[in-house]
Image (cartoon, rainbow, N blue to C red; front, side):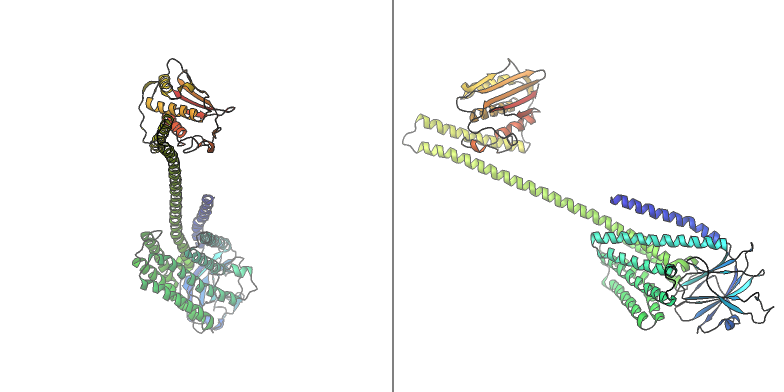
Length: 617
């Protein structure tokens, strides 16, 4: 599911990016129809001049993109605009939309030059372009006309002017909206991505990144003019004030986020103090903005932002601790980010002539910041997930090891309990027999049986240990299973109870010693747990390329073994513990049968115990 979400996220991002790349050439093509032939500017420091005085003032040439400083001054622009060659209207577009105050003065009637009237009369025209961009529809005369534009803005924002025929203006407005939508959607995607990571990991830097993105989204909602479109009744001065405040809050959250990222790499303490100083400056700027002077608060905030690239570089250089996504990766990412931010700052203060940075600087900075910080956080997140998986796997391995150790401890406890029980039984028989003044033949036999039984228990324990440790060796040679069975039965003390049925010969390639252990254990088990004097049937048959051994006996006082546990180590029916035994005989039989590539089954039928063993010839 997570892979699908990431794939969708990438698909949407690349779709928007392709749309943006396709739009950029159209942007240049739309502006190629420019109808402004000259621009001159005059600074009104007191912001007190009216149109009459401004029209007669001295102007100096200016570019179409101009910088506005943090001051109460107004800027007057005299524009010479040519008509549309096709005879249509011209649209004067003023960007960005968040300028404090823009006033366009148009010549009254047909009066455009001093040749007709000594002092031309101008009237104020309202913006009437149906777009988030501020636009004015005008109709210049055939020889072109002079227009006056008054701009007042307390923020250090670049202003860009362009006059285009209606078709080109529509295209430019559409492309501008595409760029805005791409940028806004990108920030929104980053916000939801970081918020999801924060809710999952609860890491502070993801939380600060989410807060920074939501602050930039709020800032851009005003900067793109969307709030004014949705809420036209709200006083414009209030909108401007909230927007300027959002600039400072965005700077505050950005600095806090970058500090949370870089402090993980343990830069020099004094370098981190630079971050703290920046935070103090921005907080002071916010307080001054609301309580003393808007311009002074914005200026202080601007200087703190201007110092940010230097602070990033110092922290990156002095960092000395490895952290995800790596010290080198962090330095490269913050190096690139600092360069982009520095270009924006240079243009921001009016020292550069890069029109794109002047007009779209905050968007470029936002995109660069978003992409680079997304990169560093995604790499960190991947390393964190990898480390978490490794930790989980280590915990699982430790848990499995603990279960294995517990099983070993339990097995050892069962073994000691079994061996102690059988040893005590044997010793009790021996002690009872030797305590008499004289030892009868029957007592000697009981002592002999006890010692023999205890020896069998010890032998089977050694055999089980070799099986468990895979230390049991196997030798392959030609052997006759029928001959092995006859030797076992003939040498058994209770051979009269064994009813043996074998073919003349049953040859196979196997280990004769292990075959004898298998057959001996099965016969011993049948004789021990069947009723006294009852017969044990041992049938061997050879069919095709396999031999089958059946060992069958009546169930004795111990009853029928449990099919689910009969081959388990140390399993003994509770009623079978009167006879000496280790609970290892059938466990050893099954292990040896599998070691010799054979098969064994147990099937109780109507009070009879039947074991079936088969081997390939």
